[in-house]
Length: 352
Image 1 (cartoon, rainbow, N blue to C red):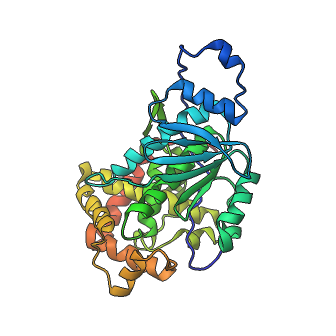
Image 2: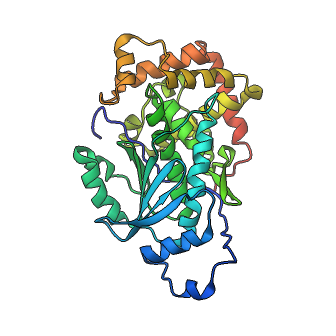
Image 3: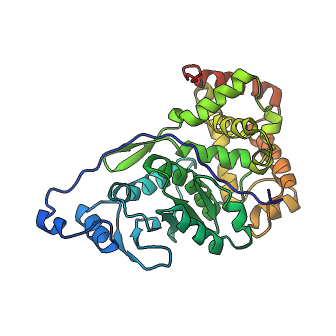
């Protein structure tokens, strides 16, 4: 693990399948003359569907493979994946995700410059791109077994199946969104916890609904952590970063960190009829606007994304923000949090 560098890579997800409605006005003879495994054919096909979220589609000239570029209101999607179902649904998916990211804030914000997503058909293409794109950190990102990453303003993924691919894009898309718009960088428990709200989703008439309560991957991991008595104490959870647990030899530690961070965000939003939701929104809004009360050096690192994040920064800021906005009585909050965790996994069954 490279010190002081934070990465977010996610590889196990669960979401619901959808269906594709084809415009009946498409000329069948014209359809038969177009090969959908070519950029030209895919451009014709997507244009013929008249998808509301899709503003334009064109061929993408690149060195990795035949591809197309899809443009929506807020995204540019560059892809070598010429798969009709996924490409017909991804415009609706990213725009649905964008609206859901906005729901974390007390009021919406505007994206002037479109966000970039790279989606490759094969891991080999993804690796070639990553070696060039990630520079000195390429080897770090190439350790990702299955999934995606966010770096330098872009979300970079490769196809691991429709459901899991959309899930990783939903997750990494949150990192992309807050990195673009927030004046301050978020501590890990907050950043990763929110990102996991956008993993489980359901297709609905061209768009997607995100369902955090149906994220069975995280719920299953949380239940196993509870059953094993391996819950990370709240005081430690809010000071950890992914590098500390991903770099350990214990897979259970990583599963506990991610599942508990996911549960912590849900706790702040949902517990006791959402009584902490206003504090949660205020925490995010002040991060968006650059209004956190932090010591000068910590504030400088929070605001300057050219300065690498450190374990020390994350530990200090993660704890300070939680105590400032949520409460200093961690012992009392932890009791409520653990009770909430037990409640949300009560009906989750773990396979033997």
